[in-house]
Image 1: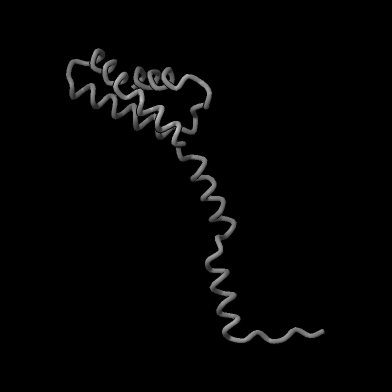
Image 2 (image 1 turned 45 degrees about the vertical axis):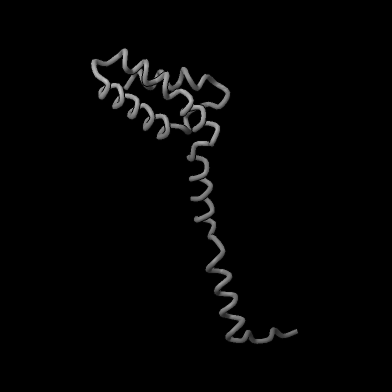
Length: 102
């Protein structure tokens, strides 16, 4: 059996399909991004502690502005290092440790 030549239109269709199919590298990058993205449960848990973090920061600092800055820094670190949090452990304790070391 001999292969039939591919028409110009068929070549264009195959090229369009291959261009729209993510490469292995793109798939790996997407998977890595998904692994580094905090889950909705993590986000909800962190946000639920926001008031407690602020009250503690307010007692630790001399001003409202300093407390707000400390909580903001804590939130940034929490989301930056979310991949290090072990689900099932005490999220509140993890957040307050970040607050106290910031």
